Each structure stands twice: as C-alpha cells, then as structure tokens.
Amino acid sequence: MKKHLLLLVISYRLLVISPVYAEKITPERTLDLDECIRLVLLNNESLILLKKEYEIAQQRVRETNALFYPHLDFDFNYFRYQVMGDENKRLGIPYSYVFLPYTGITAQDYFATRLSLTQNLYSGGRITNTKKLAQVNLKRVEIQTERRKNETLYQTKKTFYDCLLSREKMRLYEDKINFLEQIYKELNNQRISPEEERKISFHRSRLKSNLANADYEFKKTKLYLLDLIGLELNTELTLKGELKVIAEELNLDKCLAWAYQYRPELKQIQVEEEIDTLSVNLALAERYPTLSLGVNYLFVGSIFPYPEKNWSATVGISLPLFDGWAGWSRIRQSQTHLEQNKLKRVEWEDQINLEIRQVYGDNIFWQKELENWAKEEKEEEKFFELQKTKWVTREIKLEQLIEELENSVLVKEKYLETLHKSLLVQIQLEKIIGKSFGEK
Image (tube, rainbow, N blue to C red; front, side):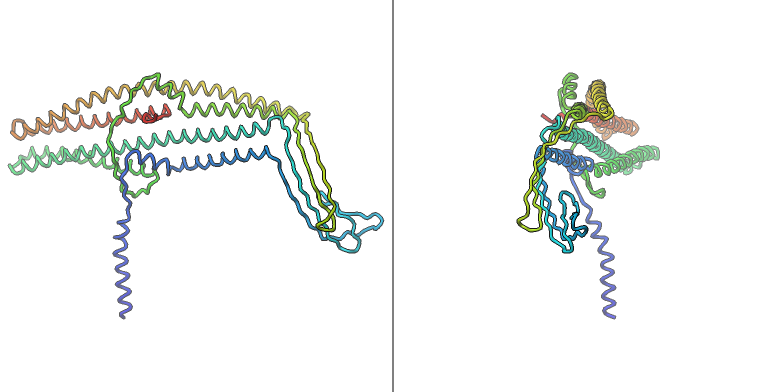
C-alpha cells in the first residue's frame, strides 16, 4: 500500500511540476539591427544552399585541373583455368588485354598485370576552355549569392523597421491612455458629469483599439522576423534601436555610378557573356584534331613474380571529318546566346537607370516630408504641453483638451509613418544600388 501511495505522489508531482518548468524554457533574445543581420547571414536557408552550391563549383574547378595531368591505371588479374581442345590447334581464350594459352588436361595458374599511362597532348583548346568555364561558373555562383544576400538584407531591415514602427505606436497609445485615465481620476474625484465621462471613455476605447491593432501588427511582424533570422518562433524577442534615418549626402550621378559598379545583375550578365564566349570556343574546338599519348607496361605469364615483360607506346590522333553539320549548329547557338546577353545587358542598364531615378525621387520627397512633419511634431508637442498646463488651471474645457490630444496623436502617427516610409525608401535605394550606405 505504501508503495502505491508513493508512486501516486511521484506521478502527481511530475504532472504538476513538469508544465511549470516547460513554460520557463521559452528562450529570450535582445537584438539590434546589426545582430539581426548577422543571424540572417548565418541561418538563412537560401544563403546556406548557395554556399553549398559554391562549394560544389569549387570542386568542379579542382576537377578540371585533373585534365592537365596524365591518367595512371594499374590492373592485376589472377587466373586459375583450363583450356581443352584440339592439341594440334592449341586454341586459347582471349580475355581483355591478354590471351590465355592452351593448357590441355591440367589446370594452370596465370597472372596478368598492367600499368598504363594516358596523356592528352593537344585538344584544340577543349581542356583550357573547360577549366575557364568552371572558373566562370564559380564566379556566377558568387554573384547569385550576392544577389540573394542583398534581397535578404533588404527584407531583414524592412521587417526590423516594421517592428519598430509598431512598437513606437504602442508606446504612443499607452502614454495617451494613461493620460486619459489620469484625467478621469481627477474628474471622478470632483463628481464627473455623464457627458465628460462618456467623452473620456469613447476616446480611451478608441486608443485601446489602436493599441490592440499595433500590438497585433508587432506580434505578426515579429514572427516573420524570427523566421527570417532563423530563431525559434516562441522566442521572447526584445528589439533595441530606434527609427532613425542615416545621414548620407547623395546625388543622382553618384547613385547611378554605384549601381553600374555594384549591381549583381549587371555582373551576372557579364559572366553569362563570358560563358557564351567560352561555349563558342568549345564548339569551335570540336573541329580541331586531338592528339594523345599512351604507354602500357604488361606483365603476363604462369610464373610469378618473374613473368614475361611487354611494353607499348602509342601516339593517337583523332581528326573530325563530318558530323552532319551539328558542330556548326552548336556554334551558331552559342553565338546567338552571346548576342542575346548583350541585349539583356542593355535592357538591365535601362531598367536600373529607371529604378534609380524613381527611388531617388521618392527619397527626396520623403526627406522633405520628414523634415516638415518633424517640425510639426515638435510644435504640436509644445502646444499640447501648454494645453495640459491650461487644463490644470482650468483655463480650457475638457473638449478642448481631448481635441488637442487627438491632434497630438494624429501628428505623432503621421511623423512616425513618414519616418518609417523614409527609412524604407532609403533601404530600397541601397538594394537597387547594390551597396549599403554604411559600407566604404
């Protein structure tokens, strides 16, 4: 009985205590923008896959190096066999590179060992162009990684700033709700009228609704940020930082010059042009002969390790004569691809020129808007403080105070949204240029 009671107590404690400890395992992280960028570059699955592809391309370059070196092969064969037949004809058995002789009625042992060397002497540029093609493909993977990195950094910065906007709005609404509750307590001590109570309650409910919406947007954006940077989705995330535009003197010519220098798409078009040029060279190389050297050293016989020693050296030449004009078709295809990529390069340059001018114009517009609303926000904050002072001395009515509170909230919201939009345009300009303004 005591054993059963002890088991029941232990089971109860495990059932009660285990969930308590499970709740405490929730991870907590405090991150700023730089740490988010570090984590996304470390954990992003797309970037990890591209890193693996880069390693594969590196191995392909090493693989092409083997084409310049001779190939050595070693074969060893042991036979226990018997060949019977017409003793006068003495027929044997052909096997690979040896001929097993006639044995008669007695089985015999036979050994065959071969050491061979093959070296390409001339191939019309096939080997050299194959190595160059592998090197250019490695460069192509680098550019793809850079392009994906730019897109990932843009999404990380945008999501981080979206979280900060929601957080700042939550702080704004919480501050105004506390102020209204303070006003309600003051008036309640002085027997607040039903009209005044209703006004305060209505505006407080509206602010709470705005707070709930901002909190919802914050949680939703935080989940996306956690998934983006590769952290557990149940992480309690605290963000460090503030909405602040980076001061950078920009002009249109500088932005265009940076875009033509750093934009990965233009680099990729250039690499594709190199690939097509090498493809043309490889297609042309098929019309040239190939020259190779082969050396064989052969040990055969029934007595080991002192069998017969044979050797041979061969120089072989292969000259293509006719392939049904397939080679010319491949050359024409490669030349057409090369012309196509040249047209793509012009198209991309025009597209980048258009994007830079559009986003640069947006940046100028939102900078001016930010200056105007920053000035308006400071003036509105001063005026609201003045109205609160007048309310203390009862120089204004409750309607005037609440109206000014609404104006204060609207101006602050507009300022935060303008600041947020200005930041998004700035990071979009960084993405289009292909370079962060903080980089040297």
